[in-house]
Image (cartoon, rainbow, N blue to C red; front, side, top):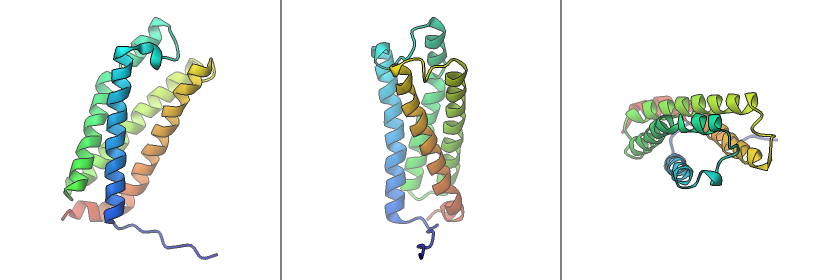
Length: 149
């Protein structure tokens, strides 16, 4: 079996895909917060006041992550050297928020307490996959990204 060589250059197709993924992530954050603010029962996997307080504490951090995702998408699309900074910052922020959320969910048995708890697992898995994919795409291309246009 012959494996195709691993491509580490920033192709136009790859750039468009990553920009799309970054903007999709930002939109999903905004939509989830809009849903949370309009009707918590749409997303809440628990009804304890402590759970609501915990989730509310993520508002600023999620807004920061959305900003980083948009900044990364804009700089990547414009072929700026700052794309590397924004991509790595977005990956780091996403990983930190994921770790915080996963630890809370494990400590409080959120995932397996109910079917709604299992719904909480879906965004955690998606965020984990997205974070790993972002680093896996960015780091091997760091020299080309840093060179800009």
